[in-house]
Length: 635
Image 1 (cartoon, rainbow, N blue to C red):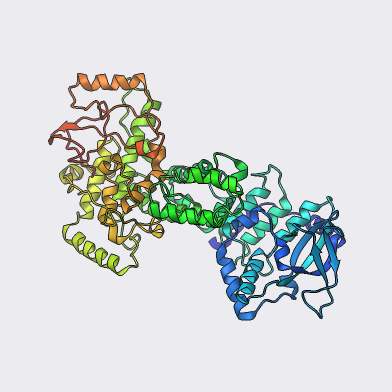
Image 2: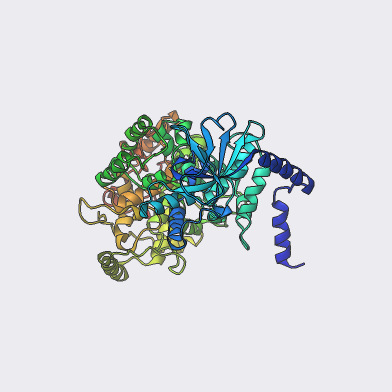
């Protein structure tokens, strides 16, 4: 049997159990009979009477589809009579004949249809084709038609089987684009019972079928094989309805292959905590944040950037920001929104920033004696390669949660600081700016890098030496490492854009860094820069530090006070190690990211006395390292 057929059979075996055909027909017949019994016919309606409510599907809609349909209607016109464009409308039986009254048509003549008139302040609850109706409203506005009409398929419903009929009418796509990955993922997990706690296998099967309808697509496999910890992190975002427009199921296999579960989960938790902060943990409010508003918030820093604040304030006043909230709710969220002091993360920024993390993980893998397999991650493999723990001084758990976390924090920092220099250019490269002046700057910087840049081999050996001084076993011989261990050139403080008031555009605040900000990005991830948090403007350096902390704050969440810590201080004094006690003051749980910085003492070693302001040295606890070896510089 061929390998291809074996893989196909294995994938099919992982799929959810398909129902018996007889059961499918029974449910379908029951639903169809009820649908026919509720159907009242085709009616002409005022376009302004259609209301799509606040259902979750509406909050995920991407406005790009509305623009697409608007262009189609400009070309072919509005086809209102065709069955595929009819809008399903449901009316409660108690309202039929009182609040909703059929009568002779007045909006258009010559059609054998009745027209629905509604009482004051009563709207017709429409269940599908919102993108088409939104596009039609745009088109009729351009044509200056004051009271346009549409055709609705009207259902008058009782309580029996009501929910299933509503679901069938809402979840159909005769003229829309294929539903987004976010809508598919969210509905699959919803019907599996992740939100409501009640499973609907029929509805779940429908969404699995949509996901796997594309020929050659393996998205279904990617979703089924997603590790449980990553699935749980995504599921924690399910209540934030509007955020799911940024979901990309086709990248889930990449997340699994990267073996970076810890930073990935950390970033997703950062998204969840940010939106919970906005609504003060109000589940009702968070479910009403729509996709368009999430797109407006993406990467904005309203507390620091006056232009971001002004832009969001204008959208708030026009009520395009958070349109499904009332004025009081909008004002409450606004008070918290203007205090956000970092780029607001979304699922869209997550999948863009993953591209940058992917470069860093390629560097970190070079420290692994064996590649991570199964449920192992890069962090777990490196922890197993560390021999720095000394029994009796502090507890192992305290050492792992503080010292080892700080060491991994510093290694990840260096791997992203020189990520593109330590990976092949054919595999990973920075983005090229679009503006002419930025392209010129990028070109001059590339010339300077060619002349004055540090050779990649020296950077790699420096990286290995840094890990070795943290007591990690690393590939390569000791002789090679020691012979090549030299100080790297000191990074000069710089940032981008060069002007003190200029800021980077919103589009540049997520994803891979650009070729015109190499030096600023590099300095931003120096230990010196991470210790001194400058938040006066949204610069390239500010963005780089923010993204790094979104991924790696789990490694630096604060060190609690502990009796064992005092023991380590006494040990340093007994051995006459020159350690500045101010540098080793225990870190408490930070109230904001500004406090999340690596500990970095000054040292007296073979190179004499120096401080972090002059040379960014690797972080050591006094009882972990013997200073008989040259100390690798951590730039």
